[in-house]
Image (tube, rainbow, N blue to C red):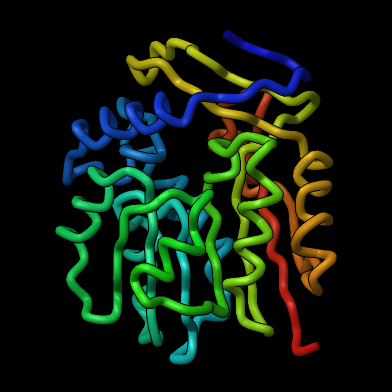
Length: 248
């Protein structure tokens, strides 16, 4: 189903099943297609990944003191991009199959990958005796979280951020209207797909409630891709926000 404007929940169990199927399609010669899709267009996957890293990574100002939390890390695509010496990287994903691949691909001693739900992020970190972070990545995760869970998730996120912290959000947004795909069979993915494409204004409402009200401000935002060839959807486009909180 394609649901326009109306708020409709997606089924987390179905989403988890979808990513289990995606993990089964992992190929080392086109690894990022697992979470970036475009299975039949490996060059597009590589180009989108390169453009995303080139644009967003400098905004993170990674250095030796960086403690980076990557929520919905998948197979560790952004972990691959962090080649600098940092204090810690922690990747979390609710797909155990993707975390298994991530652990197999990355053996650095201060890089950790854990299975866990984004909506239960505080207890996942507590169970691993992980504390707070000064850099957080939310790359394509909000589209899989229902409205009723968004405030709780972002409130947990704010609490696990250091007093001075950056949050980078990259999310496909609805250009005109909110669009929900539910039990939607994708010929491109050869599977049923479930996702919520919110408008920029909808995302802003959630961020105002739980992040901006707690001292974060938007430092930069905009469309991720400027090249027409990298934007191949009519109703949605990749958008980013970089939020920062200075010492209070």
